[in-house]
Image (cartoon, rainbow, N blue to C red; front, side, top):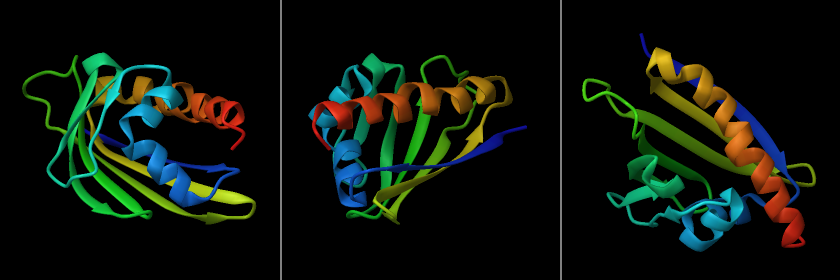
Length: 133
């Protein structure tokens, strides 16, 4: 049975900056310390961590929301794509990023749930410190 992850994090920068980091290949790569190819076009494909993660953009509301299909390279052919919904909003002192990651295969749930903080939130904080926010 597929599972869903929900996480909310805040950063000391406006939500528009967080949105921009996610959808800009160079900034995304710098923020996760790995290769990233991503587009701002609906229907456009992305590849992260050197192809370990792939998907496409289903919907983009500039500065506010990104909806993507998302799958790991180690997922089985019978595994459906997961759906990632990122929403960006204002928070005291900066921006809030809310994540809903649905339809994750059971066997990958624990790793992905731990992976968001390990491979995104912590490195993003370091990136923002290096960039002086």
